[in-house]
Length: 336
Figure 1: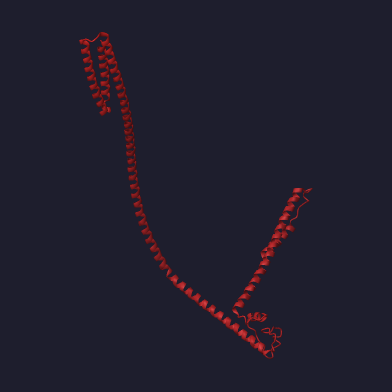
Figure 2: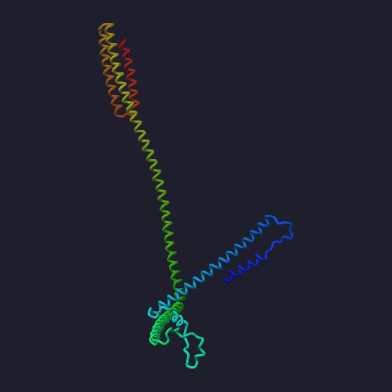
């Protein structure tokens, strides 16, 4: 609070000491007046804040003193029993002030200006005096009990301090032991870390081997997949070739039947045109033998094609061409 008052006095002195010099200039402008007002208003605001702080601090001090007084009264009520505390607490306040000196005969003039020892209201009443004396004795016994408790606490504190000092003497040795144990633990941890590092390196090498094996198996799988696809393509092409061969067989059968029919019709026409002679009979026998031979050759070639289409496909085609040429030649002979 003293510092706040000093600051307040300093600001007030600065406010009253600061004067605006108007003699040096001919006139005062609006900006100069505005700056003057702002500077003075700042000082006024600071003074107001300091006054507010002084008021708040005074209120807090008063409140804290009242709170402390209430706590003291609560502590007194907790220490003393209810029978000791009358309605007026003047005697209790006088009791807490300390020992009183009772006047001796002939010395009343020395203590005439002092107060009565316990502020007795009815000093003539002996019963009330004895009753209050008993209450004071009860308060004294309570205070003695509190003093014993405080002494016990002090002894316990002294014992604890002695134990702390004794423990402090052993602290150096314990610190050395703890450092030694910590160093041993650190060495063990280093060994474990080295073992774990070796295991990690082994795991990494195994991982590299496994990755290489995995890459090799993946390459083999890709090769096997490509071979399987090629095999599937070959089987599909084989099936297509078989279907084409079957269609060609059907076409050959139809062409053969048409050819036989044409040969028969041509032979009949030749017979009708020339008449039946030995030459015609021989030519018919020859045509029949040729037809039987061609039928046997066609059966043999069809069986060979059905058994092995991949290997005998070119051979069947050659037989078919040979049969075509033979039939055309025989047809020409029949016509002749």
